[in-house]
Image 1 (cartoon, rainbow, N blue to C red):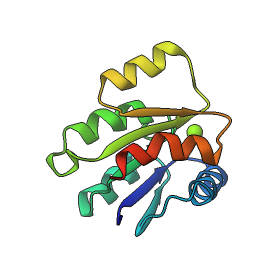
Image 2 (cartoon, helix red, strand yellow; image 1 turned 90 degrees about the vertical axis):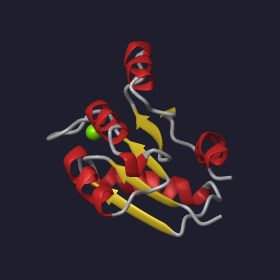
Image 3 (cartoon, rainbow, N blue to C red; image 1 turned 30 degrees about the horizontal axis):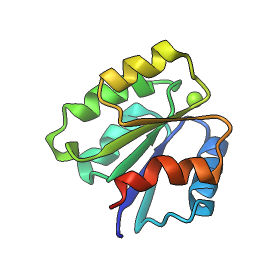
Image 4 (cartoon, rainbow, N blue to C red; image 1 turned 60 degrees about the vertical axis):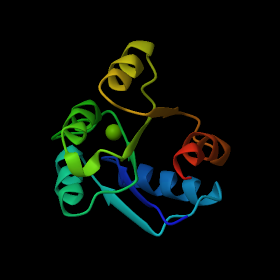
Length: 124
Ligand SMILES: [Mg+2]
């Protein structure tokens, strides 16, 4: 299993927490990247697509909902799995981003078990 992962969140602390939780889940990636907002994520993705994108909803410049739409327009990212990782858990927001092309949703509390459960189906 040699997959790549990008964590997109405007909080550096949150990116660290997510990265640590992913590691604790036992999942391993050959390449991990980080981006602070949607614009930065798109720049990095245009250079090298990733297998899994973990995306925060509320971010400056370009939020997660907008990023999902943009990524789904990129042919190079057709196989990229997008999992939203957010404290935002209103049913309406979740339904909207899923309709726009997200593949999953992880809400607080972030546990290694939850990441394992939500991401492992995409790592085969
Ligand atoms: Mg945020």
